[in-house]
Structure formats: structure tokens, C-alpha cells
Length: 316
Image 1 (cartoon, rainbow, N blue to C red):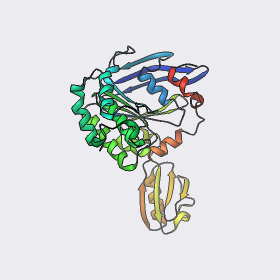
Image 2: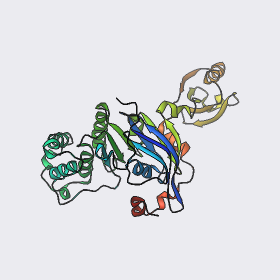
Image 3: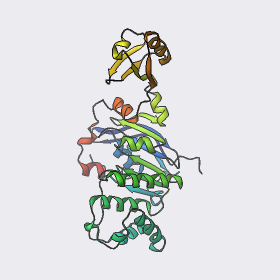
Image 4: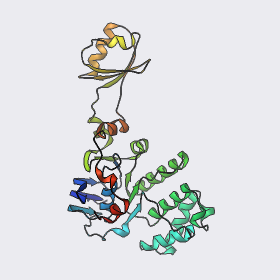
């Protein structure tokens, strides 16, 4: 496997008129990983994806995809599921998938068995010769995912792939994404589904107001919140924590108390044991949702207010 990252952004900025959507963004996406983009609406995630896909060009900085910097050099090696879904409603499902694969340089003779396998996997085989307009929203979502991956791309970019899917089909799609990674495909995933991101992503980039807030593995992101949160159960309840050194704050959960600790949690445990029995004491690792909320409190970038057509075309 190449040591060259699947994607490298170096000091990339993009504005629409006077509104900065992405500001001096640098990051690397390792190959054969699931890399998640998280952030509040308007944080610059979709603009960043469009820069990676060369739908938009940066005002400054460089974008390298699969080792190529040219705007079309790697296009046929990339699959894309956009947030705004778009299929030809009057065209049959299989015919449409073969056509879209052909646009990526894969002739029907090669794409047909792959398309058939994906349709069967997603429970769409019996709909293969039906027009797209007869499908439900969730079924169309799965067809568009197949369109993104049937040409066997090296890089797949998925913008809110779980939107509109029921829990069962979300699981089916999660399994498919992880299988792509096992095959060596790099997957870039923009999602608001924190549980999915926590379960699937090898690396996460959190964005806010057009810039990168955090970037790293989940363990690295957790360390930014520290290990100083514990859940405690004692006979005395919240009162047992009163006046103890190192207790920064207490959140009473009823039978349990969640405590933010300044210093070593083991010192708090010793102090609690000196006051009486402790029936439960556990260190709490922050979830991705908690980390996200802690860094998403700042006001949104004005990207969200831009007209969709302007953002898509790159016009101010």
C-alpha cells in the first residue's frame, strides 16, 4: 500500500464573496481508513468535500487526491454520494447504474456482476428493472450508494449517507462501508450520526466556523477532554462528595453522581473510602457526542446561509 495519503489538504481556504467557508485547512487522510468529518451545520464540511472532489477550487492552498493534484487526474478513481441525492427518475435502476459506471470508465460487461451483487446485498434485486420513480426514498438512497461504489473506486466520499434510512438499513450500510475499508478502499464520511462515527471512524476531523478544531483518532480526541470524569455510587449520595478536594463539579444522576475531577481520580476514591462504603466508582471516557458538543458551541460560519446553487457552483 502506498505511503502517500489518499487526500492531503495544505493550507486550503475557500470563500464565497466575503464569507469564509474554509480557512487555512490542512489535513491528511490515510489510505484504507474511514475518515469522519464532524461539525455543526455550516461548519465547512460540505465545502471541504467539494474541494476534495474538485467540484470547487480553493482560493489558496493545495489539494492532492490519490497522489494527483490536477483537477481531473483522479476523478475516475473516486466515488461520491452527495448530500443532495440525484437520480434519473424515468430510468430503470440497473440501466442507470450501468450508465453511471460507464461514465467512470467501467463498461457494462465489467460493472454488471458488481451491480448485481450490490443489488442483491441491499435487497433490491427484484427492483433492478423498475424505474427509479417507483422506489421509496430509502431504496433510492441505497441505489445512489451503489452508484458511488460499483465502479470499485479507490476513494469513496459519502456526505450524510445515513440520512433517510431506517435503523435496519443503517446497519446494512454501515456493514457495507466497513467492507469497503477491508478491501482497501479509503472512505471519507460526513455525518451527524455520532454513534456511527464513533463505531466506524479510524480518524475524525471536527470542524467549526470553517476551521479544524480537532483531528486525530478517537482516543486522541478523548484525551483533549481529559480523564477526569468519574461516576460514583455511595451510601451518602451527592452529600458524600461535599468538601472533598479535587471535586470540580458534581452532576447528580439520582443513584449515581457524575464528578469532574481536578487531579488524580484515585485520590478522590481514597477520600471517599475514608468517609464510608463506595459501591461503584468508574472512570468515564467522553463520547464523541460529548466532545462534539464541547467544541460546537461557537456560532456557525455563514456558509449555511449561502444559496445552495451558489455553494455548488462556487459563485459568490
